Length: 191
Picture 1 (cartoon, one colour):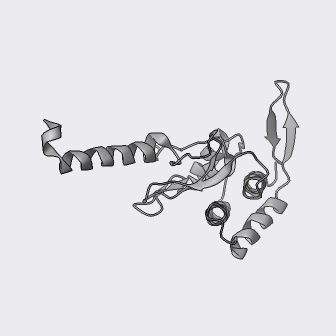
Picture 2 (tube, rainbow, N blue to C red; picture 1 turned 45 degrees about the vertical axis):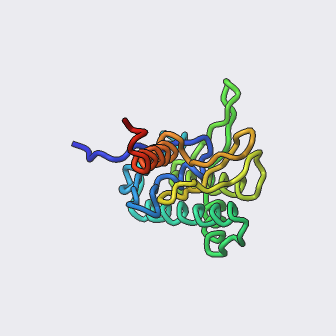
């Protein structure tokens, strides 16, 4: 019987979805890819299917994830990008040999090599991070307003004023907290 893991929090941007595999970084952290098999699961649902993953590949994935998080957080704050994070992102980007292919439906898919498919997948994620952090896409990097989360996310809303990495989790949690706080401050309103 497989162990139960927390659900993935998938978004529309590959790189920031990948950083979301570790959530609640400033609270009780939730690791969503604790095993090599779980990384295989995440890559598959993200369109980067691989057959297997080793412990060392998982460790490289975690290193890339934390480097993307550090660089995206710095970019969202308009701080200098950390050199060590840039080194990891650039290294992973150049080590992969994935190729973009066009499907008959007019969508892009990634073709990974059979010999180094996890490295290819990490290369795709790193290249996506480079595109986002470099400002090559329409949107902006922002940090989740939840004090326990603070995840970097890519805001493509029309006004670019989104506050939460995920409205169904962080946003809802904060709204509930405000509601309960207001009820505690004014008990007569609760009756």
